[in-house]
Image (cartoon, rainbow, N blue to C red):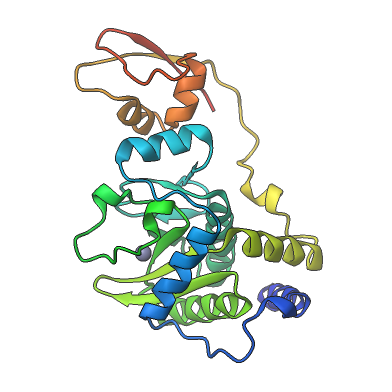
Length: 260
Ligand SMILES: [Zn+2]
């Protein structure tokens, strides 16, 4: 299984020969050059650096950011804002799938988008977390899994589709996903190995449609907190309740909670 998968990765790497940064030694060591590469990529792609929590919620409502779900083959630990760019979500899902096959444990995501106003004080002002293009991954304690993850990230970085660094305080991998290049790579990889279908992988198991629930808004609730409580998104709540551009809700109001 693993060998089959690896050969598909190799085929994709060969097909992508033109993408790789010829001659540049790949490393997971963080550097200013690495920070600049991610930042320049984000600027080139015209990505928005979301400044506030509200800006993140609005980007999610517009579909610029998509939601990470801990029941989709990976786990999340202390993720304050479970949103990333669509290509970054595809990266997480595919990596998590491989990781679980190799390691028998779920990949753990520790951070997604972080608005400028919520960046830790020691973060670079050129950090790309405010764009949602980056994720942080928990560093596995199991040596075999750690080796596999390092090798996989290095291989992907070698193709130029991601930029990854191994951070130490706290210990984690930081990965910025270059959307266009990564999605091209993912398509080629799927064609090289037709049994790996992005769509099949990202689709949840056949849903049993349940009737929508209703929820009475309490003092202190926000669309965000209600979405969190009911495993849905602000966007889905807004659509289900025909809220248009209105995000203010008041205590006593009844909301439809969309079913899955
Ligand atoms: Zn990071």
